[in-house]
Image 1 (tube, rainbow, N blue to C red):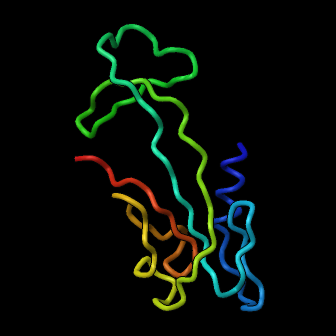
Image 2: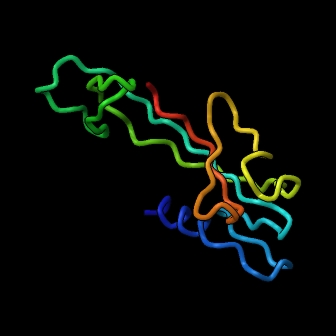
Image 3: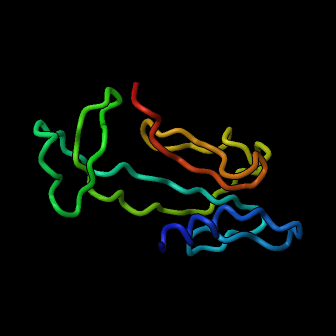
Length: 122
């Protein structure tokens, strides 16, 4: 529930008054900053016995991009940071996501809220 509230707070449209920033998780970005969220994949284990339930605290899922049966722990909570993306008009062009993660605009193209997340596996 907390994650949903944080996501809703961070995906709110940027105020029209440029002197006011926006909420970004528990942070408040200033008017010249954008909100960058980063999501994390849950830890999953492949399972061969699909008739048996997953261990307590995990959820049955399909993993690996090829639909391999697995049991996954809840995903880690997102992290948030304020970044300057004004040089490229508040687009993903200025956002550098770690590893193989891709930048995605959250809400509208000009919302000033971005998400770094893993790309779907082929």
